[in-house]
Image (cartoon, rainbow, N blue to C red; front, top):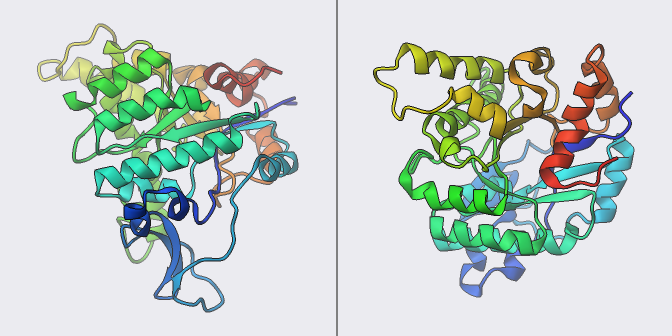
Length: 355
């Protein structure tokens, strides 16, 4: 029986008018907001629909959604934790998650990040049950470094970058100051599935299933970039997390990177001191909700690479049945391994007080 569990992946709900209130006046009309267009509610940024909610049963009035929504507080989150039997949680954004990396204007993106990080800090940083993850701008690497340097003073315990940066991939030299700063400050970097690329590349029959599988498996590419390009080799203090992507793919990916390094050695650059898999085992991790395949392969990945998360309040998460689902998933798993995946790894990475 697991005595205390910590979710390494949850999403906090921001106030609906946060960016309208806090962005510089010249940016407020382009900041994230809820809006109804063509009968569908969704998050809008830069006058583009970044994410559509599921269809509603009732008709909605077109235009901005202006009703009062103060957003989450420690009180609302603690109620959810109690209902789910979870002690603490790592907090990722909700509206900002869907909007920030859809932005094309670098100054606006930086402003969105700063506003969110300030609110997250002011609301949650004082409570030891919550580890807030700040957002970093991706279009302006100097701004990303500056925001990394602010996070410690804000009491936030990690930073988020998009899972994919197709215009400037993570093996490009321009990212080097970001890796160096994060490593030097001891700030773990996180790459959350569903950011940096469309979550809906497929259309038509089967699209919902195809899009889910494509989105959560996209972190195979991100992990491979960071391991094989030498990022983790050059920065041994850098921790990197692939979030809400499951764990079943990890054992295969680690083996495949090593196979490619050996079998295609004539083409491989750079030549690294260790196999790519060793860098990930030492410096990387993944989070999952339900993943019997990942748990079954823990001997190949190591338990320090696996973090459990409920993904509350998203529909693919385990809330409010997390305890039941955890007991099912870890039936027959040695207690020390189950405790490490559901508690110890989060304590060591985010500074939660230990049980």
